[in-house]
Length: 426
Ligand SMILES: [Zn+2]
Image 1: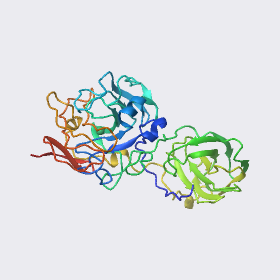
Image 2: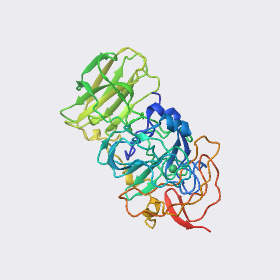
Image 3: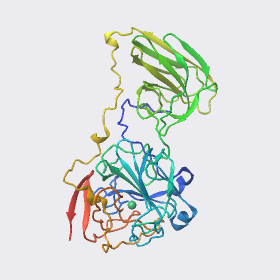
Image 4: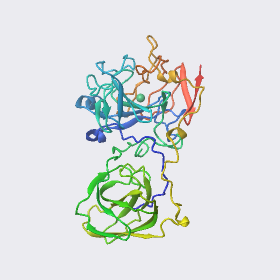
């Protein structure tokens, strides 16, 4: 890797992968983002009015018939599903959709909407892992063509925009949100053990080779604070009975190498202490203050395509001196999920956002054209058990990159950086 990563530990609020399956990743494309008040997260026009999710086409009807798998964006519990509904809707007025709703550890939920009839593969109460198959893309419910509507519901059941951009406040909820108009990355966070192959102590040198032992651990993001794992790595444990100022030297590898220190035994990046990722360097040096009895993991990375020996040495000095206090980086997250990116507009009514279609309240929906998505959806219906159904939000125009069309009447959800106002327009 070739970036010096700032030692900023971002909040690990939620890490989402793209909810389209790996085998169909290339078939998906965005057709409408969240409406950030007349623009999308990047201040562009890939949205439609009142849209509270992110829509992804996957090859229109042919793609749907071929099968486009939908997967969990993150691990969590299935809290609601529906299946058996008509799935070739073109009117945006076909009643209930086939869907899956997951709840994640922080109370946030993700919605997977408009699924293909009888494709829902999970049941309420079931635990699913990140990337687990949930169903297939369809056009059920308030939809005009096959696509996946992926929506994030904050605790309190109002929709949030998972993207971070000039028109959407951070943080991003994606592990890798990708380029505007492209797709978020398909990798799940790695949270398993680091599989330490040996223990390193002060004054000790481990001489090994990158083809001898170790483990392959993959993570979608490469950085001290977000999980360093990008491919093959070797991890070592480090402990010291007394506090020490530790300098680690990694030398001798015949290729670019990087080094990370964590204060955990897991590889989810949450315990990142420091790292050294000098570009195109076959040695790395870093220093950190080890607490007495502390358990650390040292991860060596960066030798894709290189077969070589290396030496890893721990130099320790002046353990426990006052000057040895940790001045590097905090090891705790400095922000919580609720610190950022969440509306504080308490006047807003969540049930409006639930937007269940009320009988006889169909509103005109324009057909999408020219974007290959086969149309787009109207906003979703309320999830079962999420409180009383609210009003459906009329569609004034359809996404797929279209501009701002005329408003069709009724409620319009507008806002700036997730601050929402209800605006009645003529
Ligand atoms: Zn949608």
